[in-house]
Every structure is written in structure tokens, then in C-alpha cells.
Figure (spheres, rainbow, N blue to C red):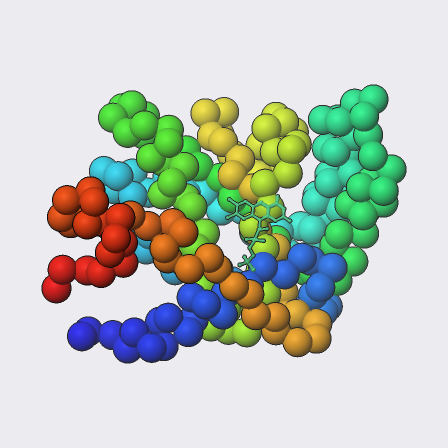
Amino acid sequence: MRHNLSDVGALMRDRRSFAPEQMTSRKVHPDIVEEILRAGTWAGNHGMTQPWRFTVFMGEGLEVLREGLPQWHALSAGAAVNPIKMEKLKHRLDACNCVIGLGRVHDPAGRISEEDEAWAVAGAVQNMHLTCTAYGLGAKWTTPGFMGLPEVKQALLLPEQGRVMGLFYVGYPKGDWPSSHRWPLEFVTRWRHTSDEEADRHQLKPTL
Ligand SMILES: Cc1cc2nc3c(=O)[nH]c(=O)nc-3n(C[C@H](O)[C@H](O)[C@H](O)COP(=O)(O)O)c2cc1C
């Protein structure tokens, strides 16, 4: 064993999503933000293209999002704009003071599929979220309906061929740290280690 699985497992199970409204106004130190981003860059990626791009919004940089969030919702929703959602978006950043824009770029040689590049970014976000958990920071990855707008890509300073992968809110949580649950393995796993019939009967018996 090269690492303590008990610690790693506890960290994975403790990782929770916190909405920005569930965060306090305590500031996140930029050194910690760097640690979070560095952890992201250690994710696996096909062909070492390292497709993740991060845009950190802190301090005055947050104004771009304070103005942008309701505007982008209005732009993408058109006539179907939801006044409750608008109000919520106007106040999204009342307390939270660190948002990381998530983006990806594509291998210019076209060797790697767009899906693979997107999955690599998802791996990076998981690493980032686990690092937040280790620091006692809450975080949430959101993929709002407006993230395909060119205005959002511009706000994240992504190049023309880049894609927005969402917003990652980071902050110290208010109140208790919640627990969660997951389905037991038998709901999501099939073992094909022997005949189909036996696999059905002993779905979860590994052949060690
Ligand atoms: C790819 C991805 C996109 C997500 N997008 C949203 C989102 O748009 N809005 C939201 O409230 N939560 C979003 N979430 C967070 C999920 O709601 C959250 O992970 C889920 O409820 C499980 O809770 P946990 O992260 O605390 O285990 C997203 C999570 C992932 C992995």
C-alpha cells in the first residue's frame, strides 16, 4: 500500500457540494486557490494535452460575474426568463468571494476527441474539489444553461476554439458539514468474471 486508503476514502466521502449561498464571506487565500488549481492539473488526460483552463475571479474580478450572471440568464432564457432565478443570480455572490471559471481547449492537431478533453477537465475538477475538502472549504461545480453563450466564453478569457465547462464556487461553509449517501454497489455494478448465470447469483463476489 503506497497511501493510506482510509484517509483517501474518508476525503472522497466527505467531499460535498455547497451552493455559494451556503458560504460565509471569509476570504480564501490566493495561495490556497493555487494549491486547488495545481491539484486540478494532476488529473489524467489523453495524450497529455492538459486541456483544462482556469479563470480565477476574486476581489474586483468578481464584478464581471455579479453583472454577468443575471444578464447571461436573461440572454439565454429570452421570453422564458424566470424572475425568481434572476433575483437569486443577482445575489449569488453576496458572500462567496472566489469563483473559478472552468474551460477547456482542444488539441490543435485534432488527435484527441472533444469528449476525452471534457472528461479530463472533469477529472481535474474532482481533484480540485477534493483539495477544497481537505482545506475545509466548500465548493460547487455548476453548469448553467447559459454557459454556451459567447459572452461567457469572453468573460472567462477563453480562446475562440475553447469551451466553457462551468463555474466552480469556493468558500468557507456556514453551519455543519453535511453527510450524503450513495447507492450500494450492487445497483451499479455487474461482475462478468464467470458465466452470466453465476455473475447474476454472485454479483459482488470478486475472484481474488
Ligand atoms: C458535471 C457536474 C455538473 C453539475 N452542475 C450543477 C449545477 O448546474 N447546479 C447545481 O446546483 N449543482 C450542480 N452539480 C453539483 C451536484 O448537484 C452535486 O454534485 C450532487 O448533488 C451530489 O452532491 P455532492 O457533490 O455533495 O456529493 C454538478 C455536478 C457535476 C459533477
